[in-house]
Image (cartoon, rainbow, N blue to C red; front, side):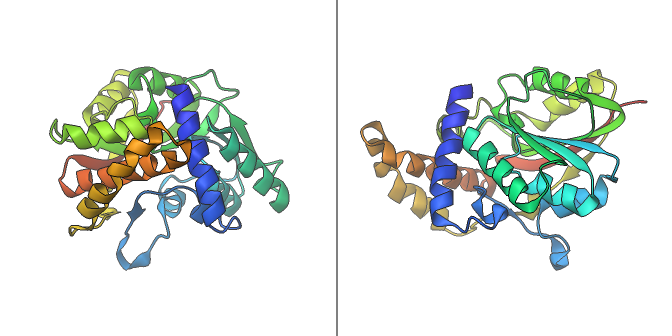
Length: 270
């Protein structure tokens, strides 16, 4: 699965970097959903994190599954704190490092090609994992590893797609296959693990903030791209189509209420 995750995000990076403005990390990062906040209060989830996680300049932040480093860089530069971002994609990490060097942040914001299931260097005041734990082979082991590297009194923020029911197995199968997703975990399974680890937590439901196409457009996209998937077996250039096809499947799953977008903020006891 590790190799599949690397290939998926490397392919996305190659495609996105050719078609979007490289000066804008947020545009470069492969986003399949956009959050819609009332009154335009937040640009994206990083603004929400900055306001609600009470991060200060003395904090050391880990972004587990950092992509090209957009969220971590935004938080650290806004709050003048230090951070470490990890990703399995060497191309994402290379881009993130280059951007930090260009902007003069390389001493405060570091990036490493690494799995969040490996032993991590150091202890962290804040750990964020945005849409990354669904790639975990074992959600229980992943949470244990992250919490083990959290300082007493530290906070961990996990935000992801969680399964609400067992329906629409075909759509879920496509997302798992083409997005290197091991399993759609339930939110309760995450809560149970944090409870077993004796962490205090609060839940934030962002499901209503998820923007998706509510009409038949998504279904049409699925219909048109499905035949092209057959070409991926013969022409690797079409691999990117399969990734976007999985994105359309995810939109459809939200439209059908088969997924929920929730966050948990857990605090490790001092």
